[in-house]
Image 1 (cartoon, rainbow, N blue to C red):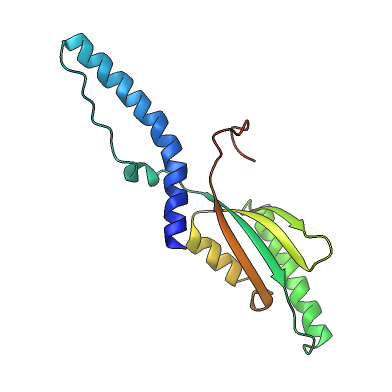
Image 2: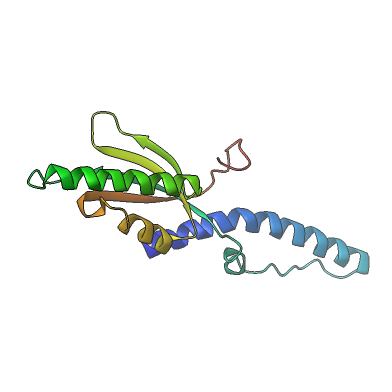
Length: 151
């Protein structure tokens, strides 16, 4: 997951880097032209921009498979605790979207977290985590998106 995470951070940083690089190039070439110097420009590496990003979006698919030999009371308690925790995370803005998958005990969600470790900590702390199959896909902004904030 680290290589995917790095790619996503780079993807989000690259968009910002392109804007910043354009600004730097415009300023540097303009100053060089005024001074009568050649117009070579140093543009900082993208890695320095990666630190600017606090939140990342993750698409998470969760399939819940509770064994049939667990007592119904325990299952009900786990479901109630899961519901409470999911609502807390939604109110905090961390669990940004939550959809049920029709015909399955599953959901599709969007999480807004600082990175893979925070997402792992959240998911592994869910009451139903021991009974889940989870697939995580890091997301980055699409250049053709018409929304400024992707919410």
